[in-house]
Length: 280
Image 1 (cartoon, rainbow, N blue to C red):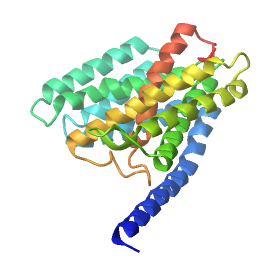
Image 2 (cartoon, rainbow, N blue to C red):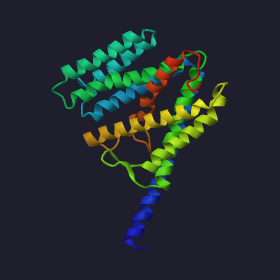
Image 3 (spheres, one colour):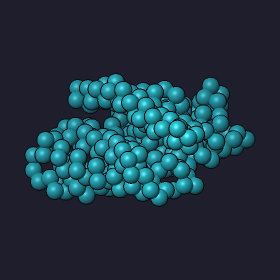
Image 4 (cartoon, rainbow, N blue to C red):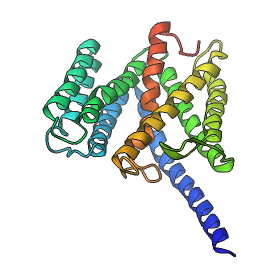
């Protein structure tokens, strides 16, 4: 066997080994997340609070700051404070706290590395996680809407990963994320649309055809969030946001697509009104 063939075989083996690791991690994380989502709004809010803490600490490290010193410590502090106020039925006040907290970190931490990106993490992460909690708090379709969102993002991730590995082809954004391909992007959208159409009738009664375009929107936005985080990591010269999840990296690596798609779904839910599934 030539050296080139051996390298190709080794690379292929490594890719599928990575997939097995991803699946094992998902097998542990998914039941926990789904159990909290199913059990009730409080359980889900607590899980989101824990996620907010972990993600904000990863954001601080990504920006090259120290999470135990100002201004780095202000990111998880203001993210949790603003989110907690908002969850306590003071949404506008919570959002104001997130904005003020982010501005304070930018201003007071201007001598630190990347203060603008560091401070932007507070309203960005806080608002994204807040919308996930707000969606679940709908007493009629909260569980259905969040499940549809989460499963569509998962389907997009899996479809993009498999299509990219099996088909390959032209790169989607080589200067940002060299590993992503157009075939992967299309595969992710198709997988999300098919999955969304299949699960919508099981989640809530009523017409399900709208699930196609909503799942498509979720897939596109979530892939955009993935590219956004990839761009940040490339800018700051890091491979992963953390090492918490085997095969995935950190929480931010795993949840970047969900974080960006959640506000879009929340806007749809707000426009349609409480008690209405986002695909109807």
